Length: 139
Image 1 (tube, rainbow, N blue to C red):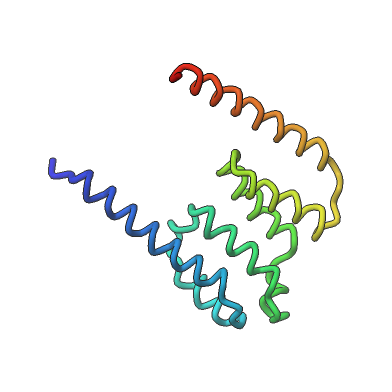
Image 2: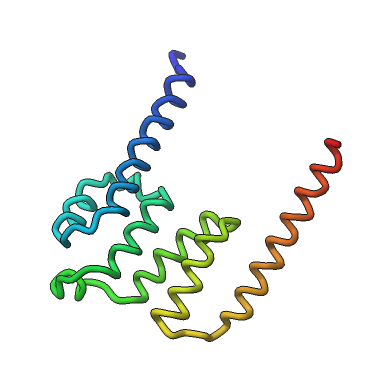
C-alpha cells in the first residue's frame, strides 16, 4: 500500500488555507451579485462541508440586490444554512449566535428562543465542567 498520510495531511491543510483565504476575500468584498454568483458556482460540492463557507453563503444571500436571484430562495432557506453551521460546530458560540440572531432579527421569530438559548448554555456549562476536570487532572 502506497499511502502517504503526510501528503494527505498537507493537501488538507493547503486546501483549507486556500478556502479560508477565498472566504476572507469574499467576506470583505462588497462586489455585485454577479461576483458572488461566480464565486459560488466555482465551488466544488465537497467544499460545502466547510461551515465557514456555508456561513459566508448565508450572510451574502441576505445582501443580494437582484430580485431574480433573491426570488430563488426564501428566508427559511437561509435559516437552514445557519442551522447547518451551528449544528456542525455546536460548541461554537458565534455560529449559534448567528442562528439565533437571524431567527429573532430577520424572521422575527421569538418562539422557543429562550428555551434554545437556555439549552445551549447548559450544554456549554457541561463542556466547561469537563475542561475544568481535565485541567485539574493535569495540575
